[in-house]
Length: 634
Image 1 (tube, helix red, strand yellow):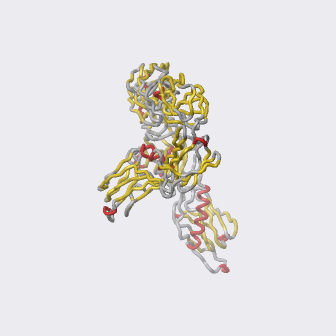
Image 2: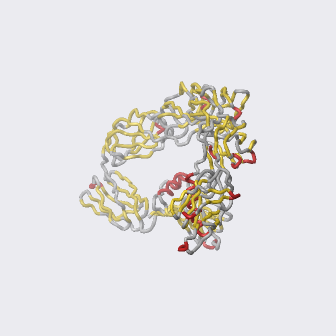
Image 3: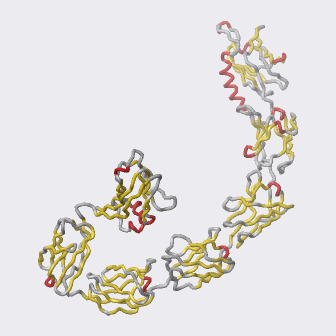
């Protein structure tokens, strides 16, 4: 187990040769035949190894005198420029002399030695932290630290015994199984590694437990050995759990939130030792009552096993989990939130596991139409059940009419003029749909527009549009005023006033009836919709908050404009656009606080649109008076 010094010595020889080029006695008169010493090495050297000298005329050297008068005459002459000797075991450190023909050449640097440090054995192995480890070898008195695996060091100051032939140390509790290293404390230390690993005792258990279907609050205990080496017990997610050790028994309680995986004990050395594999219990044998006919506010009872593990419930179609109204080991109750749909009702547990039970929502049902055939543009009644759940009716031709039911059995609807005969589809407020029977839609006898234009309608232009029953048309009104028009067969040409802007009513008056449409006209200027007006002193970070419903029609590219009382502006005035979400974050980058000199605006992006329609808008800032907040649509 001796240290491998050959490479080390070779390196030292090269370094010494370079260093000694100017540190040895020299004679510039090479032609005189005098001995010239240029370098020697290695130094430090190993007793019993070779010492090399480099120079000129070295074949004339008859003896080499080592410190304290030790003379060596057995010289290996490699060439005139190189000779070698073997260093005696009793050689001392000091200067070296070369003798030739009665003259002497002395080195100007010391010859030093590296002792043949060795490890012959160590015991005991396996060894337990806190026990004494004995290391035997030679020149161990030159060692200044013992390094265990993972760089756990014991300094010579803590050696129990420190002799040439033996070192004794107490094994630190952080020590791990592995190679041990004996070293000094030099900047580039001499290090001696053991050829075999030191085995370090770890805590152990009789068997790794199977904790299938365990629950929070259950106490787990296991029998083991060397449990005094346990620093902590870790759960599958890496979190520590309090534990107790008595004699050879380790015990701990499963906490809330325990997850599946391996539970380990961690030794002071950092090594993990498995204690158990856990499969956390989940609710089973689920029965929901009621499971069908569910609607907003319905209280659902779910019975089963391990129901006390449920923390929250997530309804299909709803993004946020809801809290339970009651809970026991065998039953939970939960109230159905708005917009819940048919599907899997998911029950969450603290462990992260989920289980589900199917539920079906209450659906509207169409029984009949009154009358059974309806003229387009006229009202009719849908007879049925649960019609109060309906928010819109879709006719043939994919024409949608928004409705506000006042009864669960009768729903009065006006058939669109451009509706087609076909099945009606009822859309519930949770987004689910129900199809009904075919409704026959007859076209009106008065003049009407079968299809409204999809292209942009601009103020100050002529609108050409297809109509039916043109012979019945007597007048046309836009925004309540009669306008001139021209009929070319079934094409109606009507001028759009330059003052029209936004939603503009178009009425066709016939000899046997009339009908009104709403056109969306792009005016010369923007369509301005005020969402707040008044006089609010925005001082000391005061604010105006507007609900999301005010922005239901906002579009990407619209401008949000805050009108400011110009006389209230100071050099320190600041504006702010925020959302109504938790903590009122900025609605976009750079909008939290910014300097203003008057009215200020915000261009609506897709992200801003989503924020406005979900959490509304808050304007804030300091040192100005807000007069109005409007949406400008171009």
